[in-house]
Image (cartoon, rainbow, N blue to C red; front, side, top):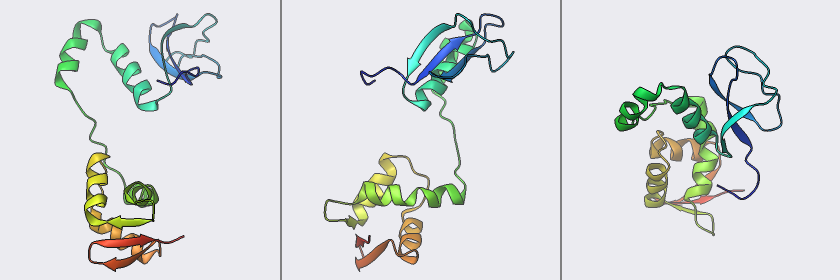
Length: 146
């Protein structure tokens, strides 16, 4: 975590004992019962929304079940819609290109796997070429445009 003050807080409601996350500069009303937390019981801090979600979820699981759930190592199987996939293509292109703006097929595949993108590399190439984001140099090499 960075040295700056965390952006998100995990708070335990003083009324219903529910754990919830809030941005640091917002009012601290419980998302379950609506009770405004005058003296909030802060149990965690983070700058990362994924970590915030994990902290809130794990704290809301009864203590006697937490060990069982942590052993399961459940990963959310979040399927992205085609629109969400299309919006991530510029990020994919930027992340898989070198300093000269070249994208090699192997680097693109590695980037998709490393960052756990569900989108197929062929779809990235097809959409990128049709949108004029990249120019094909060879069967395994493209150049980013713009």
